[in-house]
Length: 481
Ligand SMILES: [Ca+2]
Image 1: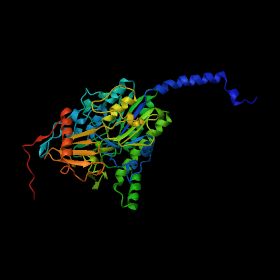
Image 2: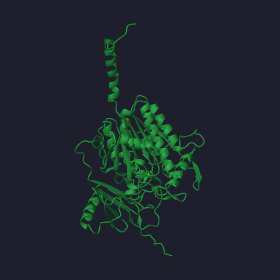
Image 3: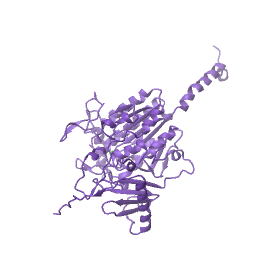
Image 4: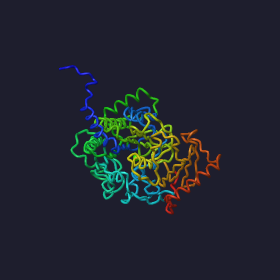
């Protein structure tokens, strides 16, 4: 057989083959991007390694950040679960939707408090067109895997554009993270279950199982573009983790007594969350979808600073407070976005953004025209376009009580942040650039700035039709012992 030079190898057949491959490649290149939205539950802003967390190691999420854009000043539209989830899916602010507290809380009557919180909607209204429905109309396969928490059985994901609902119910948390993901307590047997995860194995861990289900969604999509909404329950309470990971972090804490984060079980839960992200990214790569998939990772509210098993769950240091509060610890959350060919690898963006922006961002990335009432596309920030303007103000409204707060609204305008509490109408003013921990209230020393932000906040509350708490005529002040 004669030796063939490389030049001889380029034959008319090869040219035809090349042209054929271009034709084959073209539809893939113009195919709409897949969208993978990974939502953590109650993950704090400073929990992750790439956000300064000092205990848990999150190599996969850190790598996602190094390959995409990491936002330092992303906010959840609410300091609690359901409202933020509604804001992500609808692009509307919870105050506009009147979905201002979590589902179970909408079913409970007011306690002995100075104010009666407004009646909040627990069921996402069926007329709301979610981003899943928008993508579904555009030919996407759509699936929720994990937590839903946006209403009762007549308001489950199937009614909002999702082809598949794997595990989503009205419950905000599983009773246990270990198979069969249900338990019994004073409310009865089978309390807080996760459906559709039958036939599991002993010691199977929920975050791992949800990831298995997410893999199947990607496989089942086959040639169609897909929207995978992987809504992990972790690291929301109950604080339960795989023993081998707990042991690892217990050892690390013993060796490093000065760490801010002190909960080995909670760290171990986040380790499993990081495993999940790693497996999803590997799956995208293995099936050739990596270059055509928008990946978003974020959390629905700040870290929970209450106790579980007599130990504080997390510490949002350097931010003040935690879940439920409108101080930064309650609403500032991680946000990482990777979209090959769009995002600049390793960029860190400090523009203030909010969970309502994800709807418009996903729609824009899929080249769909839909925009939302309260969001704006983050694509200019992802593309690093010159002249990308940060939004001038972000607003928050939580007219309810929680362990960390009384009814309150807030506005962030540039470096300035104002909180106004409904009980006594007092306002607090902070400069987040100089004082990110919100320790120095400037409201009395800067009355003009305080008044300016109050007016902005009041105008916004009025414009979106926000509900306010009312005085409670039955309120009985607790006797002091
Ligand atoms: Ca949550």
